[in-house]
Structures are given as structure tokens and as C-alpha cells.
Image 1 (cartoon, rainbow, N blue to C red):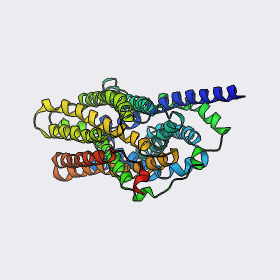
Image 2: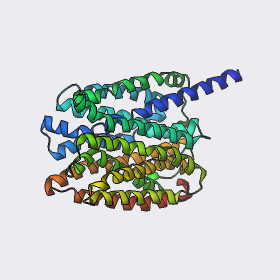
Image 3: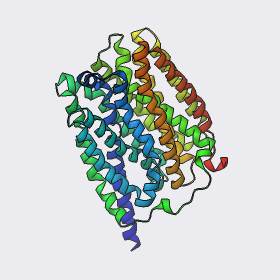
Image 4: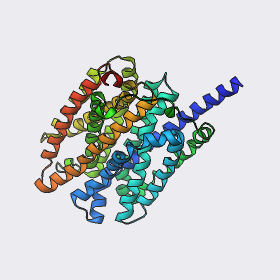
Length: 400
């Protein structure tokens, strides 16, 4: 009986490993693919800068509204079950988004974003629960595959839509294929979870109030502002550099390279951070790298743009990986980690949602991208401070 249980546990963890990796690939690509195609979509539907920016902001608003609810639902239904049904919802959203018309475009985007929010909140805590001795490695692999998917979305969308003449709908619809693969891989964890309805989250209480915890807010700002910079970049970078004569296809390639540059950070930061008691200098350096990148982007020399994009990728990726690690490193158990993840992603993504819309609106009003880039500089300064503070060797319970 013991061997049977051990074998079942091993199989469950192996199936979860494969399922997490498959899901990670579709957590960014369906969203990052929109940026290089935004001009095409804007032209077809005759959208203003505000409405075009709203298309990339709908996912962030969805993340922000629903992330705080996901921990409670997971405690009731189980994390594996929620993720399984979220993958089905992702498939539905992908299909509706490309079905035609402006209303399905926004509706499908909201549905697939809700599905992605479930993965964003629950996967880090599932890593802590099922792979407690390999948190750094699992976070590294998870972030690596997610950014490979994001790079594929950014780098391949414009060529498929323009050079191969697929159109923007077909270029976005190809994400149905990896989503279908993720659905298949999540069937076994879902099936095993049905035989074990008791969730760990229901058995471990959490003391204190995270919403009054300064460390929780430092992690929230760190995570939220890196999202602010990431989604603002993938939304408007093609049009920012277009003023210097850079084509949408070329910039789409730059965005793809940017996310490929994220690979070293994805692999090294989580593994290295897990071995340290304090991660202050890593958090601070994330903000400094981002500051250098944005100042290069403000410069009038076209030759500075590609290095700026590469540094943006390095800084954003490092901050993202570190924020995922903070959910586990600064919490005492899975329940606390999920609640921290829900809080940080709720407030963080609502904060990030301001980025694309505000940048588009500022450009409409002022006809220049400089004010928007100054906002990015302010965000990078706060990331530097929040990363330094959150990197100190504390637990959430130390601030109760």
C-alpha cells in the first residue's frame, strides 16, 4: 500500500510538472502577440489610441479584479480543478477573440485573461506545495517556458500576419494549438485531484492581515510596476520606435529578442535567489537596469534602441522571477503564499492596467512619447526601492 501511494504521488508530481510547463507556454503568448498587431487592429476598427490601449489593458483589469477571488475559490474547489477548467476557458476565449467584430475581440480577450489569471495566482503556490525542495528550479523552468511563449507571440505575430499574409486573426488563432496541448496535460492532475478533494489550503490558517502588511505592499509594488513596464512596452514600443523609422515587423522581432534575452534571467535568478537569505541587491539592480534602458529609449539615436530593448527584457524578467520567488520566500505556508500572490496580482495588475491606456491617452493629447517614457522612469525608481526592501530577510509574520 505504501509503495502504491508513493508511486501515485510520484506520478502526480510528474504529471503536474508536465502540466505546469505546458500551461506556462500559453500564459503570455496570447497577450504579447497583440502588441505587434495593434496597428493593424487599430486601422481595421478605426480605434483611437485610448481604445487601442484598452485592448491590451483588458487582461490587466481582468487579472486585477479576479486575482483576489481566486485563493478563496481554490480553497473550496482545489487548485488542480480550477486550473483545468481555466484551460478550457482559455480555449473558449481564444476562439471568441478571433471570431469577428469588435465586441467578440474584447469579450474573448477578457475570457482568456480570466483563465490566465488563475494560472498566474495558483501555479507559484502549487510549486511550493508539490516541489518544496526545488522551488528555485521549478520557478526558473516555469518562467523560462512562459517567456519563450511570450517571445513567440511577440516575434512571430507580425511576420505571420504580414509577410505570410495570414491576417491578424489567424496570427492570434494559432495559440489554440498549444492551449489544446495544455488542456490534455491537465487532465491527469484534475483526475487525481478528484480523488483527494481535501485541499491543503483548507487546513493551514493564516494570521495577520496582509492588506496592512508593509512587506506585502513592497512585494505588490515590485510585482505591479514590473508588469506596468512590461505591458506598456509590448503595447506601445512598436509605435514609439516607429518615429525613428523602425518598421512594425522589425520591432516585433526586437520584442521577440527581448523575451529571448529573458531566458538567462529566468534560469539563474530563481535558483540563485533561493540560495540567499537576502535578495536586496538583486531587487535593487532590477530597477537600475530598467532605468538605464528607459534613458536609452529616450535618446534621439536609433542605435540606442536595440540595447534599450535588451536591457528592458533583462530588467523586467529579473523583476518578474524575483517577485514570483517572493511569494514563496516571504510566506510561511501555501495558504499564505496564495493569498500574497492574490493580493500582489490584484493590486499589481490594476496598477499595471494604467500603463497602456495612460500612455496611449498621453500620446493622443501631447503628440509625443516623452511624457509616457518619464512615467516609466518613475516606475523604475519605485521598483528599485521596493525591490531593495522586499529583498530583506523577513517573513510576512514579522510585520504583524
